[in-house]
Image (cartoon, rainbow, N blue to C red; front, side):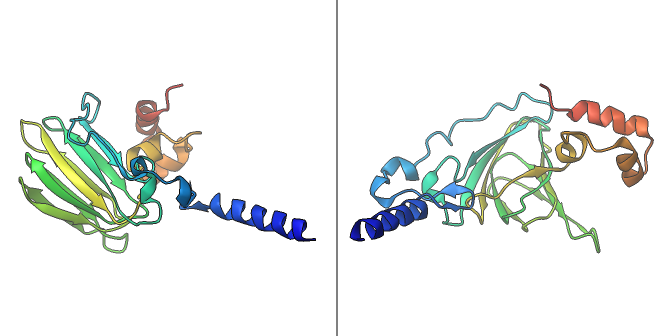
Amino acid sequence: MLQIIYCLQSLFLYYMMAALVNGFVCKDPEEVKADDFFFMGLDKPGNTDNKVGSVVTPVNVAQIPGLNTLGVSLARIDFAPYGLNPPHTHPRATEILTVLEGTLYVGFVTSNTENRFITKTLHKGDVFVFPVGLIHFQFNIGDTNAIAIVGFGSQNPGTITIANAVFGSNPPISDDVLAKAFQVDKKIVDYLQSQFAIKN
């Protein structure tokens, strides 16, 4: 009988230790090491040679397992001249951005009831907040590179880039639906879908 109880306790502890929190496995405290709380390389610029001219280097629970359940993370955003971090949302986090280099034009749109556009031009040392879940963007309006560091109120903020999600869904959203939603000709929707289609 004691063996059965011991086995049940062991199974319970195993499943408790393997429990997912925020989509990530909680690590056995006995196996935690310093590297679980460490990330190296945020001083290195990211490659902005892409269609939008920006790149985000995330530092969240996927990079630092020790962040799980702690409610914070950050990222570095690099911008080529006139590079854009396209309109997107973070469904699980408010974002706070600090400009380290360059000049950024930033903004967010309030809820669907007003669709009020809140915007500001930021310079080195300026800070701006994007409330959780709202569509926002950052655009380098200078002819030199720009760098920003952002903090998030979640260890796993998530990102939904609007154009990618709408025009690059897999399988594609019907062009009838998108043409009606955006009040444009289906040929425009087809073109946009071709630009954002996932390449296999």
